[in-house]
Image 1 (tube, rainbow, N blue to C red):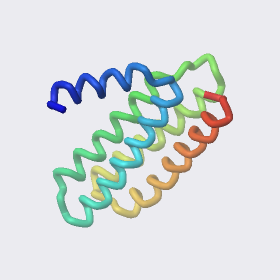
Image 2: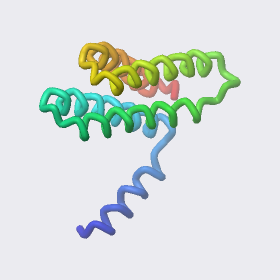
Image 3: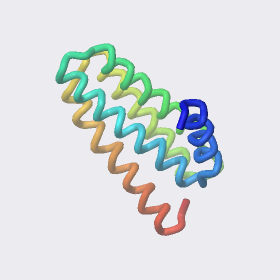
Image 4: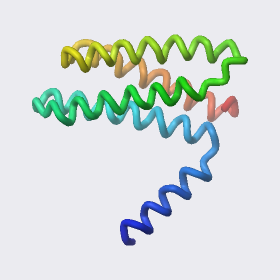
Length: 123
C-alpha cells in the first residue's frame, strides 16, 4: 500500500470511530507519548523528549476544548486536564523524570476508567 493510500485509510478509520473509540485513541496516544518521553529522557534524546511532552499537552488541550460543560463531570475533567497540563509543563521545563513518573500512571488510570465506561456502554 502506498503512503497516500495509507493516509486515506487512516483518515477513513478515524472518521468512522465512535466518540468513545476516539476518546480512547487519544488517551492511548497520550500514554504512548509519555512512555516515549520517559525513554527519550533516559537516552538523553531531549529533542524527542520535548516533542513528546509538547504533543501530550496538545492532546490534553484538545480533550479539554471538547468538553461539554453542561455536565458536572466535565468541570471535574477540566480541572484534571488543567492539573495534568501544569504538571507536564513542570516535566518539560526541568526535564523532571520524577514528576513524569507520577503523572503517567494517573493518566493511564484515567484512560482505563474511560475504557471501562465504554465497555459498560457509558460513552
